[in-house]
Amino acid sequence: MSGISIVGLGNMARALAGRALAGGNAVEIIGRDRAKAEEVAAALGGATVGTAGAAPVGDIVIPAAPYAGVAAIVRGYGDALRGKTIVDITNPVASDLQHFVVPDDSSGAREIARLAPEGAHVVKAFNTVFSHVLAAGPAEGRPLDVFVAGDDVEAKARVSAFVAGMGLRPWDIGGLSMARALENVALLELGLMNHSVKHTDFSLGITLLD
Image (tube, rainbow, N blue to C red):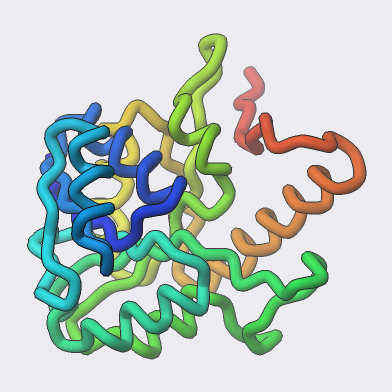
């Protein structure tokens, strides 16, 4: 079990909080609109409500917002994130849904890591799973795969254990340099959504062959 602080009140925040609570984790919901945060926590059952701007209590902090919003969150919290594991779930996709808004030699996770204080560790995860798919969890006996990338071994192991405790299957894909690859997977999913599948009721994962 872990202490999880989720900054955000949208669909992904709710999906992550719901699965985290089901996995036996202590969950803190943080939002600028405290009344709405209290509504979300009450609907989930079991979550506490934190104060926007105050130091998150969880050892794992998940800023559940679009990329630009997460950069602002990490910058705003500053030293309050020292010693925390920050889970980057973002996809810094441009409005054309074909390119990124970060430099070609970087990634959303790398840019967020540059904003994080010394002693905080950024781990990329959950960016390839749609919120409603995450909320539903494994379907028809098929595991839901979550790809994890990070430079700090302990932080990555902590996030992987958190993922496994949610009933999902974590896959370690290497250091934070691999975050760009994960963001490209999300771009692939958007391409499938727009040109082939035509909806978001799907997930990409690993099939192990005998």
